[in-house]
Length: 244
Image (cartoon, rainbow, N blue to C red; front, side):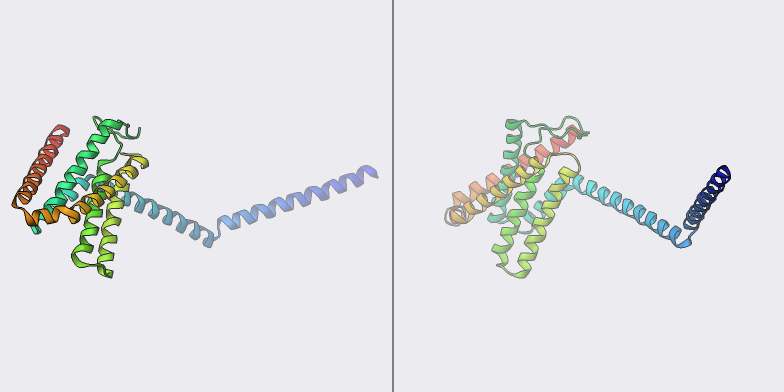
């Protein structure tokens, strides 16, 4: 009797377990074959694929913008010279060349290497970033120049903000492209902002009055501008031919 009761109890437990397993399997099969679940999963995969595609396109655009940074900055500077070519512009461009030369000198003195991710060879040291320093100088000087030219208004504030935002983004590309560390870019941008502020202060404080009062001062400014512009062009061409 005891064995028969034990067999009956065991059979009941086995049947219950089998029924539970069958029910679970049916639920899983129903979930797998549920059209709404499959559609939701497919939509999620499509959204992830679109996100990866957008990210790749954005990275590609950033890569091309980084390659064109020096040409865009040089072209914009040349356009301003052709547009105004007055004493104020000659002083600003001379300061831009001096700022870039200071960055090159600091690179040699500090001699801090670039990130290990840099694939290019024969690159100069990385501290500070010359691109970031030049972009910060040009952006800061242009922003102050807009206020001096048109006064402080919503339009001038918007233009100045747009210029500084563009310069900041292009400087950030030096990090995302693996060409500089964040510290190298931050130091370069800080030096560029400081150089632009000091150079503009010198113009407003005494250089502008000197060029208006004395012919020799204006002639000296023109010679300084011409020498710095020619020196920059020769340096840029020599570096380009060396790399290519």
